[in-house]
Length: 329
Ligand code: TXA
Ligand code: MG
Image (cartoon, rainbow, N blue to C red; front, side):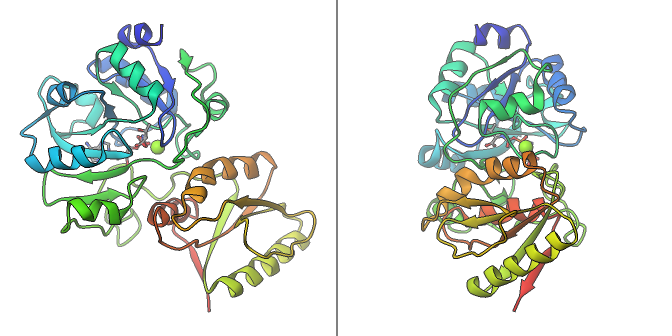
């Protein structure tokens, strides 16, 4: 049924191991346009085409460099997206008229089944309203898109919880968005890959369309603190009291191992602590959504470090904070 809807040009939200996607037939220009309408997504933000086989890769891309096959061998199916030269038969709409196409083979069993049954690549951005945190459960999709899409496949919570790593292979290989494959893992296959990710607003440069800072934001104002752990935690407690005394409802993103002593009214989301930050990654967007649902005016968060998925976590926190960081020294 889901595959039939895709073939009929309809919108189907589906689970992937990173976040939920809002899918439509990647080869159908009208269906791709309807994704932008459902998400209220402005143009200028191209969409990833999802595939289940190497045959579908050849349907989407031309002049595929041998490096792409090596990278795909290492990380597909999984949380990695490759930017390649677009085949002429792929609608302009998916790449906003650019000569490229973004391709990913997801690992989630439901996504795989859907792709196999649909027998067409599926274009899918994250299944959230534009600028909201990405959806990591079917319920989040419903919160943002109820009434605007035709079906949601519920595959339980997304395990990685943060979007795929996007790399451009049409020029010197470079990372456009850190994500579910860590930079360290990537470097094991592409040692020379350029990993400095730029932001709009960061010297005014934009590498990947859609990499604008106001992305992944909760409704609340998110304030990000970095520095030595103990000092940052003390500062979080101080700031929460100050904000509360001014009448603000305060939420905090912390680790379950952080020693904290907040006033009772502060809503603390405790993220699982592990060396690779996979627990933080997996819980991050759901926690932001819960703090919004609590009606928080301000969310205080801290830098959790760069180990494992830390680069991607930092990237999402920085965007949610609209690029503002307070250094506690
Ligand atoms: O994990 C993910 O990547 C999820 C799941 C659903 O696959 N999808 C996702 O899609 O995060 P979206 O639309 O929220 O983000 C896609 C990113 C954007 O930063 C976009 O600019 C970039 O990929 N992108 C897509 N096509 C591109 C292209 N042709 N050239 C450069 N960047 C591209
Ligand atoms: Mg998105």
